[in-house]
Length: 285
Image (cartoon, rainbow, N blue to C red; front, side):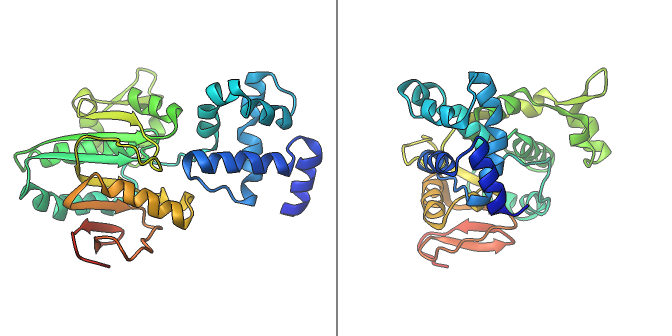
């Protein structure tokens, strides 16, 4: 079945394309996330549970509720939680963690021995805990302290991240010694939990990356903004990058996903490795 045929089927069934248009325009206004036509099926499926929870029969009823006063107060976050994509793993794109160990750490320690890291769009926390493990290991070599903030727009994944409990298969690709030191296995062996010494170095916050309102009182030495920009159009990407750079220290490091690149040439970021940038004032790409 072609997309146009499927769109027509859904339109005549429950999800009219005009309703999908209203939903995606609202999502864009709220979060900057750009939902193309081919995301109609995804939205159809993900919002089905909200219709059940609200005991609504059609998507048209859901849209009416969404734009009502009550819906604007109580449903907006549920909508964002549903449409946000959360794909992550421990030590995903491992070369970035190796770059920290071999390059970034020594440069950062020339300026501070209290390293602040921000994992923006941290999803369910695997990236945050991976970073915490890496920096804990580096403390065996260097004398410093660190703290990590993870943020996301999806409140459901933030709750999961705070609990630090994951299905055991999530740790399958991690080497034995790392698992032995930093992962606790449940009695039934179905789950693993991050050890307290790693959990205590992190905190989680709700942050909308497109919001220009102040998010922090401090600045960071390292910011991970990986696999996020792909969900934004060019204008929103610029807005997000500019918001992020407000909180990156001069000579700090910005990590993007390997499939992402910076198309903007009027920012003070210099590439230093694959999808790794250094914030250098007055140095243009």
